[in-house]
Image (cartoon, rainbow over all chains, first blue to last red; front, top):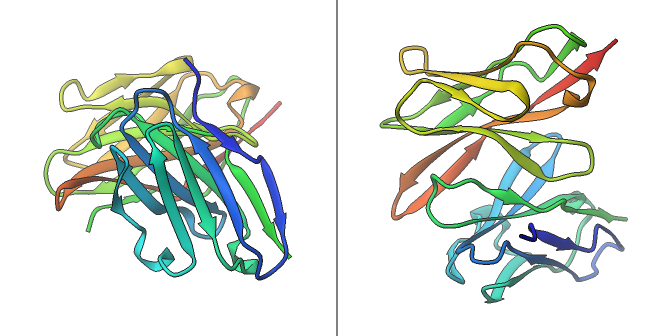
Length: 114
Length: 115
């Protein structure tokens, strides 16, 4: 089975630009998560979908971060407008359902905002 | 609030030596606990997971962890470390809150293996 696929692997943006990160979860998984990973803050939850419905939008990330799940096999994370402090690795993960299940992570997108 | 603490940000061990990475959790109720590993330029991968039952859990690549309710701990162990174990290790707990399960991750422990 294919794992979680994230594209692009690297993204460089100018401050103020709009960027869209993409994620394809494991086929058949119902839950999808977006995380931001930095050395200072560690893993921070941005969004959580269950069966395509947004269950959590990560509170502090609401204003410039928007995740969508248009179908069960594809999700996007839009950052608009980007700021230098958004430089981080963005990880997408999926699981079958329920919080006791294993999370399967993609390799991440490394975003650099200049 | 539920939390996970990994008190050691960095650990260095010699190849072939034994390893213990510490994890302390704060949780009311029955926790479901996980250890994940992250190799350079990759996402996190599951090493092992604890569901209520046997407190010692076996994982991949010779890793095991022991759950202790009295100590609120879930330490990861390996008898003999290999250079390929050089990675970042994350402890996590999941809990059910307001209709959703939430994963809480520790800050991670960066393991360095030396010859």
